[in-house]
Length: 431
Image (cartoon, rainbow, N blue to C red; front, side, top):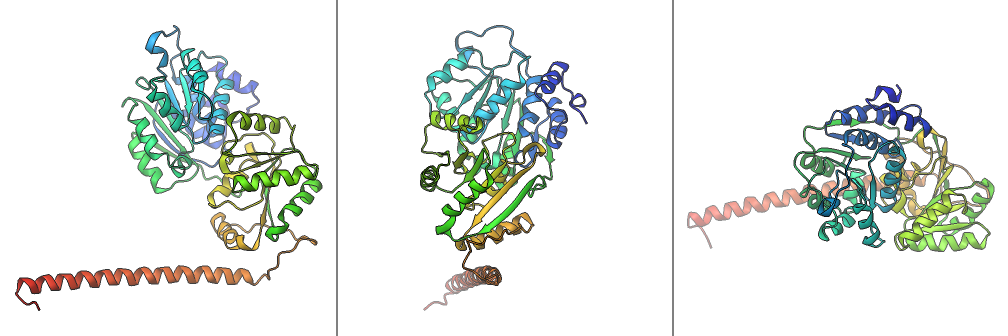
């Protein structure tokens, strides 16, 4: 199938072709025609599958282009809204809209925290009709009356599961309450927890559900694991980076402190590295990402703040210096490489205290990740310990189940005793 089969105008097809896109991805094949038809959708698809284009392209076609410049309070009215969980993802979507809309009069504005409202207000007044925003910053603009959602025709919630994980559910509900009832809505999510269904019911009207069965062990991504003691991870990482001799290596850690410490260790060994995390200002984060994209630095060390918000073509290698706290985040981390069906590699460094978590991860993925043996860096653990850990997990699971049964039985007994006592009171049989 080609983009010509997806109800897109010739001018948009020409833009897509000029950008080097030749064939739509599965999510684009299914979502674009439905959205072009004005229907609501709930789309479940893994990261790196082309979700942004699947909702931006039909949005550009469906929105009526503004012919006259708006004045007064009408300057704050927008026609379409896209919500995303992180600043990086907001910027990424905003830039995609700019690339795709060169033949349209549509203008996008990126609304996110960490920068002053002034420049964003200026962009809204200048004629932006599509807003891409984080929930918290959008609520700031609503409070200041520097944006108006009363005529929004299309709303998209991207990375819905991440938004809920970050605690934005109340913010989203507050925003949705400001939207007109008559609108087109779309929700995109990488996973499908119960909270997503609840949110979908309140937001979408008779939606078409699209589920792309993405192989989260992606064939394009070569995965491997090194078992290594925690105190030797930094030393081994340095030797691994020097051995690989690659540009643009993305390393994930769990905390800001570990990120900063690791950057210093790599710099002392002559490796150009920078960190990006929540304590960095937005300007520094933007500049660091730009330097990384331009290969001015070789290594970017990041917390999960960018697990879903960085899009670099041909990123060759992702390294999990630490396994993510939530196993599901592993999917989004390694999804930064092997994008658009290009080859990529993902390496995880696993210490003894991460073994149980790692085995759970393999169960989640339903695969066995190949282990690479290293001579000078060994983990002080025998292979049979995997069985011990698995047995320990099973015992804990059974113990929890037994405890729950006992508690339920106790509750039932207490209820029966209370019932019997109340009956005796009624009959006058009390002591």
